[in-house]
Image (tube, rainbow, N blue to C red):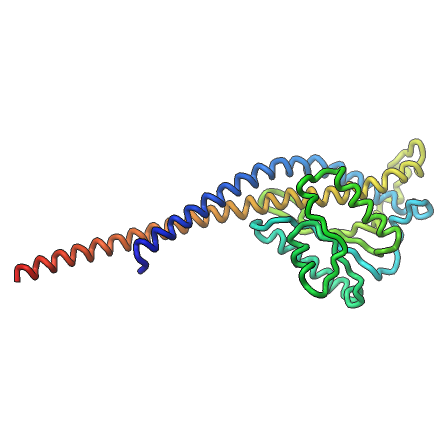
Length: 293
């Protein structure tokens, strides 16, 4: 049985850790509220815009904007991997890294063997993994975006990715991120960013669903680039909210586990203290008996 001093030291250590995890939980909860409001406001708009974009994609193949929906043989692939700059958020970062690795080594095995699969890292954690290991090619890294996540800051990043596709630097671009559902649940998403995927079922109803004013060409010219920028921005917002939700949940569990550990340590301390008192009583009794003898 450990000594009283050892148990007291462990109790103080766990209490200190519990205070830290509890504080981190409250900070994450505060940040989560703001991030959650942002993604919930953005999601309906982004969803409808993406729906319109998919319906339009089959009708723009002959236009100048058809470059965004051009399907080419997939030789070079870019995977946009979105995680976070910090840990202590459960499996949030590990899931993104694992899925990105799976896409590289399994889905795009042929392209990877030819050295034609590249990773765009959003977040320090994914960059630390893919940038430090052989066999991966990191094309770009951005860890500052989460310090001031706004549409204005995302626009130039999206424009660069779009230009890389239209200039045929990459033949296919995917995004991997955690989609926010609630504070305790995040869904890992892997979706195609470029080329634009059309909605075959709704294309036949295109004329009945939309009235183009002033004309389709002008609308398409404005709509497609904007929709692609919104799509990347939404993925970053989703990931940002998911990170804080995952961290809040992880810190909540850590705080609860610390409470359970404190109960066990307190019980161990009481047993050790009782044993110590019992030994002292036995020594006193034994000493008294010896004096009688």
